[in-house]
Image (cartoon, rainbow, N blue to C red; front, side, top):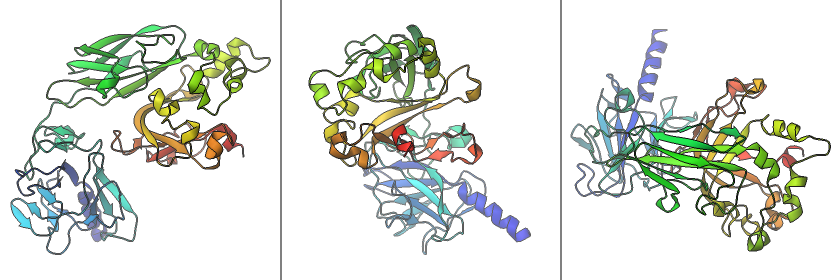
Length: 448
């Protein structure tokens, strides 16, 4: 019994190891890893951590031929309490000024990569499936003077969120960085009957930038509204074209905003979708000119009077139906969906690996007892065409297309950390809390 208890304690200590700092585009002045990519690991506990059974890899995960198994012969086999382990690409490792030749890693670190630390529970690499211990998010810094890591003074003594650090500190404690608060919008996402004034705030921000056309607010070329200070107001109206950024009126408006301040990393972008139920029922034909010629839908299919009504249903019944079920909102630039290079364009349906950044929102309707207590979520993701047969013949084979959502570090998070199936009538408690991908499948496939 005592032996089992000791093993459990060592197991917990190993999994406490954290990725502390990552740098690519080598800098000649980087102590210990001059001119090379490097990764720094930290033991935040007061007790030694054994390194055997831990593996460092990039976004290939494990198993991967270029991953690094820690604790190998001639390399550090443990990391003391509070110590830092510096690992250089194609080079050495060092702990507290002691260098270990040939103990670095082989994989490369790119601007959109993730760096992950994995653990094999048996204490030896291989055999049982590896468990993800830690992973960078939104990695990595894009120049040779900054790094990507956990700022000093973050939550749990520097084990909080990753950020771009203004100074590289290989083998030394990280510098501190002031992080902005989350972007908030009032009112929050949901269903509305009338246009309204929206208030956007971000604690600590010197400016806010927003878009209303689905584009990423971090893209300076897509900015709709930018204002000094930590708050701004926007008029939300489905009929508004927002200075021409929207091609035509639509029954929903998605506002995406980001906060910024000098010398501080941008806040994570936030997205809120506002659906105007009356406008959904009243939307008209929107396929026009050359645009219509490139899309596989027919005009008759998109005629709203046939598409969104049924014989015998009153307008009140239709409005009630629109707010009776959870809704998934996908926000992205119009051109990335329907444009000449869009994923839903007939000519592109069979193009492999065509993927664009988007924002996913899961929204629960208010005042419906069935969904009481569910909050919903928002996350950046990549979106692409999904499936096979439905994409044949430029979509003529099947007009209802499936989409695949991919959660990757280059968009902001390598996993969707939300219990998407929390409302499932059976076994909701056993649903995975972290997802690499989601598939949005049309109803026509579910009935086959």
